Image (tube, rainbow, N blue to C red; front, side, top):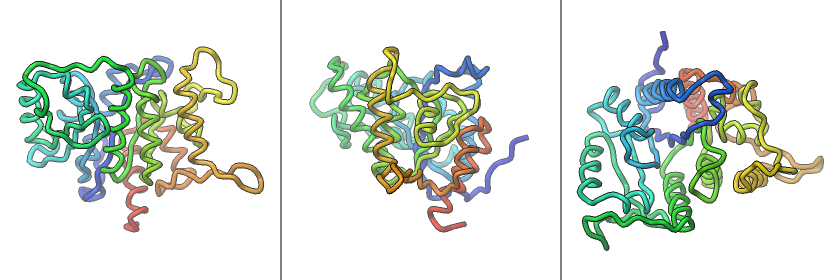
Length: 292
């Protein structure tokens, strides 16, 4: 039986949850159902330990937003621990009445922030009527996603990553890779739960963490094959440039500076245990705050 963390282990901490579908699940003997079950257990552990959560996505009930909201309802029904950010094109694509209804539903459990193209909070009613105003320009959608992710990075104490697409994404970079880059650039610690594969495993291996031993190897950014999305290659190269600095013996890793030792980061990147992931995240954040 999984036990919870101490009730105040993450009190006063907002964790950004970066999660996306992982194409590696079948090769790892997993499926989306088991992934969602593990994610739900992880979220319950974080909430029970006093954390609040931040997430950027859509308002669909069947997406990860709905999963997060279900856990909040179950674990902390009397509090409002969820910050949900909507990119420009997401809130513009919904009828105003539907958007208002969903925001009212969220109001019992957290805050929904509608953002401008560049990630600033806006009144979603301004400049439009009831009908949806869909945005079809890919460049505008990508810019809006970057703006949302930059807004989130400024409002969290740490970023927790699981899974994530390598291709078929809407932004200028794979979503979780961009969220990791923006968090690190903002000085936020990242916690890489890479055991479920996906782009999180690519990030972990690019930074020298082992990741799950049965996860596919990280793409070779030095000589990428034609099947790799060039935006993925570009993002991983940017990550290496950010996290490595010149030294007398070549390029020296700066490290994740997430409060965890090298060995603990290797455990984190290899495990699929929600309790281990939550516990290591809590340990890292507490160390950075000088509480342990």
